[in-house]
Length: 332
Image 1 (cartoon, rainbow, N blue to C red):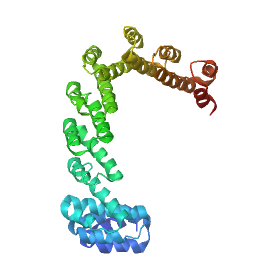
Image 2: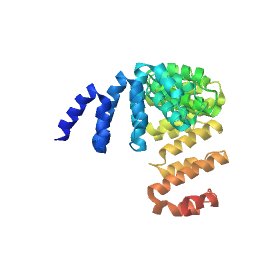
Image 3: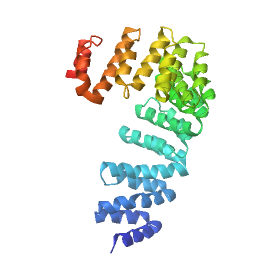
Image 4: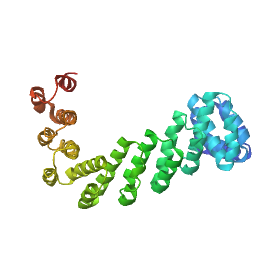
């Protein structure tokens, strides 16, 4: 009998007695056929009798991955039909490893269908590192359709700190593609200063893709000097992509200081792949020694990636890079 015909027979059998069909597959020992039929048979059973289907899934004799997939299939169907009952089952699991796996599966059951509900559940277990990763994934999916709502949710549910700041920064950066002014209004809600500065740079960069003059005006109008510097650097990086010559002329209007250093750093980093020597020459002009060293190191790395034979001697002979950095770049 062909596999297609056998599959049709099993499918019809499963509609009448899924447990018999599944146990027949177990006894047959054809792992390929069993794996192909498992989701359909077990999922259909879970729709009608989730507790019985779960009992089978928990005793399933397949390999670890297949066993986990069986539990996941039932749990997803069960949660869709009766979330509270599925959750109660998860909470009664005694084995801590299996309980954690089931909790992640329960959260993921809403990952695409209803990320808001999944995220609300996950927040109750946010001390678990695996759950934290799921929270970020679901919140990011929420952000694709409702960036403002996802930021509001993060502000209400995520603890203040780096994770929340990082998430808001990412959302605001993407949000700026569609509504930069609205996205910018949320920047002040990022508590971590480093993440906030990065977000200002991201928003300014997104603004500059469609309205360069407007982005420059917005950045220059910021009252917070540190955030203004980061925003200008964001513009500089984008300006370098669009028109490096014009961008270099713009940078020449900057007075020496933090804004210039950050902007030159961003500019040099963007042009290094196309004009490594020009990027080097600009990096040399950064006033802050630590930032200048980092810029030169990054440009040197790009030079070596582009053409090691051409640039190695130049880097080795330069007195602008420390011996330790040269060793890391050239000899390690």
